Image (tube, rainbow, N blue to C red):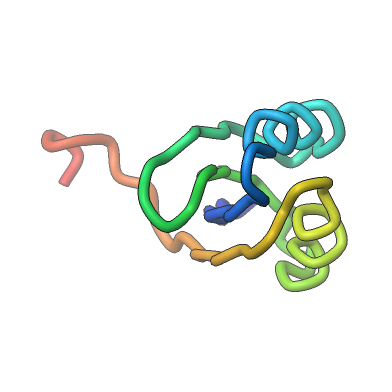
Length: 85
């Protein structure tokens, strides 16, 4: 499994609806946060090693109601805090 983070920009007034739909329908979703700034939501998703990231984002995230734009970050390593570095 590998983690990806996706920032999601929503149509005006749709962030909570979009977040609920993502939580209800995307099994790969680990955590979803509301954020301030250019994007409205930040999602952490775990994909299988052979799962296509681009296809996942375009087919599952960008098709959610209210999604206007996305920005995807692929994570390489997870560190366990200051003592784990």
